[in-house]
Length: 323
Image (cartoon, rainbow, N blue to C red; front, top):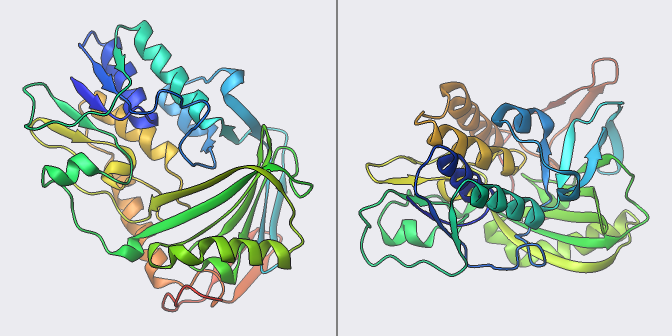
């Protein structure tokens, strides 16, 4: 089996297949994932990790989240504090390298260079390149999507007084329609970011700085990241000799942009020769339709009942991506 892409989906797939005794070769073009990881906020629910049987070591966890706040234009909608860890903020590059090391222990071979197949190899090919999907496109396996089905995420990482330990903060703001801004804890201080639809990628950084200025958010950045997030529903991901995983198959939560859970799930079910659960596929399609039918966030009305912690959005069309 040849696996292209040593991100979370590809590395986990290599581990699962090698553990079953398969001959696995994993190609990853970035030999320094710990120092230059893929841009990612790193959040993943502990429930999903437990489901696929993973227990990350402490040194790949940046923070254990026990609470969250959700804001609409500076006004708090929901606030929760608990005593149980509900979310891990992972050190993305360290987590990927840990998965690769686990795969190597089971006999997988890791080759740190790009892989460019001129023809489809005799072995089974697993594509986990991320949202770019270069090989998938070259093989004619790409399912076309609209530009608005992708988001551009930008984030700064560094020391910030606005971060709260063990708490993630989500902001529904006019600068990120159909998306949101965020402040996450990080082992280097905090992450401050924002997402916009791909056609408005050029405005992403200006919007982030305007939002930070208006909300008094300060950060001394040591890392500046940009990434593309597919926010649609999964494409066909299983072929006779090709399997497509994670972001490469557009497996990302259409509302949150969260991709780690989907990457783990896709590898887990592919390795067990099973299709994605119907409930998961339907959930993604439902969330995708919901995203396109509801204005989120600046052109909607929020009604909050603090007793039930419920927020309702009024229906409407997605507006243009601008304040």
